[in-house]
Amino acid sequence: MKQFRGKVAIAGVGTAGLGKAEGYSELEILTAAAMAAIKDAGLGLRDIDGITTCSSLSAMWALPVIEYLGIRPAFIDSTMLGGSSYVAHLMPAIQALVSGQCNAVLVCYGSTQRTAQFNRAELTKVRKVLEPQPYEMPYEPPLPVAAYALAASRHMHQYGTTREQLAEVAVAARKWAQLNPEALMQSDLSVEDVIQARPISDPLTVRDCCMVNDGAGAFVLVRSDRAKDLPRKPVYVLGNATAVWNRQISSMHDLTVTSAVESGARCFDMAGYGAADMDLAMLYDAFTINTLLFLEDLGFCKKGEGGAFVANGGVAPGGRLAVNTNGGGLSCIHPGMYGVYLVIEAVRQLRGECGARQLDDPRLAVVHGNGGTLSSQSTAVLGTAETL
Image (cartoon, rainbow, N blue to C red; front, side):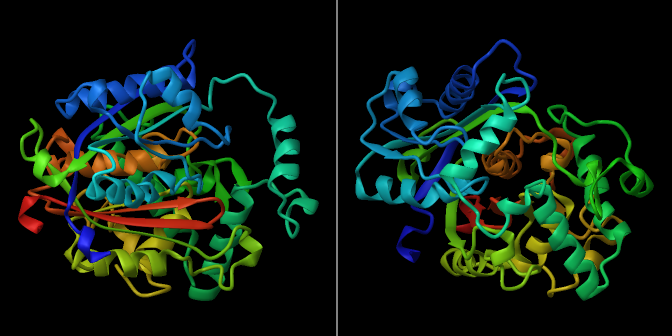
């Protein structure tokens, strides 16, 4: 895949409907984010001839999106891999652009998970039929949180990770969120607050878990030669890889090792950079244990050392590594699937547009998406022109 390195750039990003989008449909806020991203790229809707989008609630989500936007794209991808999808969509879009199948790809997501009116119990019944998980669903665990709690418990048992270290992840995310005017959670948060919060699934409390919000996000991809002529500073896709080893958490060979080990290695090999070169890590933090696992699996620290890595503000502002500078899914936004926001924040940081939370001259960012219950993993490396 090295032939695709740096051949495509992200030219525009946009968000809409963050928090509670009462009175608006998913299509409406998705369109608002899409139009914001297209405008940010200096393009018009008529320039869009490729699209990637998916939804956890609709198997044919791309169809109504295309219809609503009124476009006739030459390239369409609606692969659904859970929360990692919007990082995994990069490679097929890159291939379509480099091959000349299309010239501008819109990657767009919208969800009204918080305000939408639907019967969650009935939805669960339907999913049991359409997506059977025979080793887990018969016991009716409170998924997905129970799966991540299981991984957290195993990590604590196997490596001595402490409850306080898990809480450090949430505290760091909140400190970043307090620097981000778009973030929804702005109040102070301490390690004690996290541990003493309402229990959800032992050892996790509600503050170890991502929020449930409405929101939409989008970005636009073009070939790198074209990006140079557009108004925004291009952010180049240097690497991307996706890996899946399991669907059910009970089918993992080791609850502390995810397929991010594979996706990260292949992505870094394509990019020609490693974890030590990254100025920023945007990691899908649906739960606090995620951040520890991905820091380890992507090579920022050895297996079992994630807890020590994040301790004492290790991933907070001023720490050893900038992680989830927008506040993450724990404190910024999490509307069902969070992957698109990982990309958007990395782009904004590399373009130098993040205000109070802006890093000092970042050039390389790793973006890592997670889907299902530690099921799908997708990694991307984004860089400025200096990194090509």
